[in-house]
Amino acid sequence: MRKSLWARLELPLATTKENIWLALTLPELTEQYMYNCQLHCKWELGSDALWREFQEDGSFITHVSGTLLDYQPYSLLRFKINHQRDGLNGQTSELRFILSPSQKGVLLTVEQGDFSTFPQAEEIYAECVSGWNYVQEKLIATCLSVK
Image 1 (tube, rainbow, N blue to C red):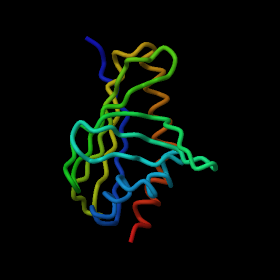
Image 2 (image 1 turned 180 degrees about the vertical axis):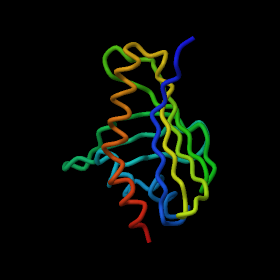
Image 3 (image 1 turned 45 degrees about the vertical axis):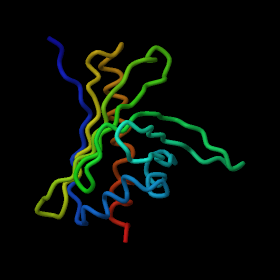
Image 4 (image 1 turned 90 degrees about the horizontal axis):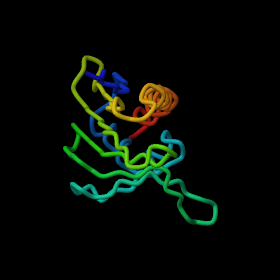
């Protein structure tokens, strides 16, 4: 039996679930923390979710594509993420944003996985953990700055 490999962040935030939701769903806010990428989605189950970087010439480059699996405003977002990197074509992971009450305000939990069936599973998992750790401070700052 393989060990489950899920990257996970737990961020207690002194703000409202509405502010966090905006930070997770508005393209101009996702761009502030997600590697300069705007999240574009119609917010209908099964619709495309595209993390796109705006270029100086007015065009976009899509860096990550996926599908919206679950949309429960102010509580849960789930995506299927398509991995396009060499050797990973056809592999998918699930990305979850879970909002729940906490003593400080709202606990934002970010989970991505399960990478256990991927080629080089441990390496891909470690890269994902590193990536979420990298955006963590900007994600927190964006959630706390929404008015």
